[in-house]
Image 1 (spheres, rainbow, N blue to C red):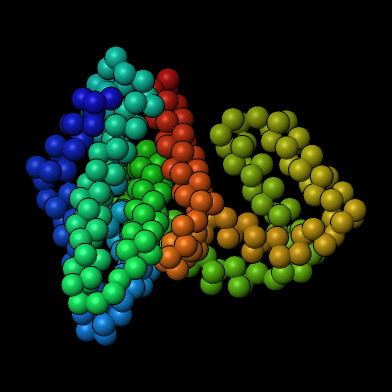
Image 2: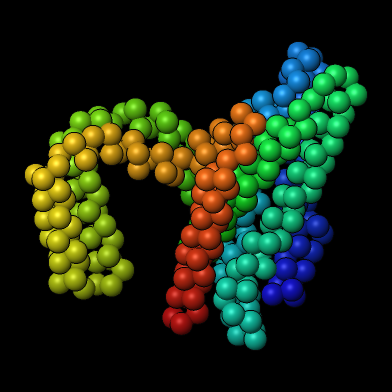
Length: 287
């Protein structure tokens, strides 16, 4: 894994991709810092971090689009897959290199509260809590980008899909407002999702019987739950969408709250995305 990590890290530091990523984040941080802290004399650095969450929509797709897609396109993934390391070590080594690149601007950001303290009173606990949450949010976005990159051999497609997913998560509050909170409409929506899941299963395993059983059993369970306790579905869509709303879990950190649940959430997102990436790569390995 160490060899994979060093190779990947070297590739970012010997090309413009890693430097552009660092420059882009620090540039926007400097602009917002000048506007809020230096210009408006606002004492909370967390406010700047909260305004910067959109930066991942552009920077993460650019940084992660080649991490696995390029390997598949150049057929160099066959060398990695035949190396004496597990798929998990390959994926984690590449992801750790991305986190290292992201940690560079984050370390520089740690000096901003110290700079602010020269001009007034600053809550270091609140500022560094916000920095921690911002770092975890970025790591979760990077993990998602790595997973999407493992699904295709085209860097362009990987970048576009990553942007689409991140943008959807970023706009999740607006998306959830389009759905009714009524129990019946929520139940119907979940029923359609179960049907869609059955179709996805069929496309993956090409087994009509198993797909039909999953669909029928799921719909029956859904109907029984609705008959027994229809209030269970009230606002259900909003609750589900809130789970995948990455930015909303950063809000507590932006408000200077050390959120243990938020930390566990981001770590869970990272673990799930890396697990799915390992499964995607392993499937190609056996094929």
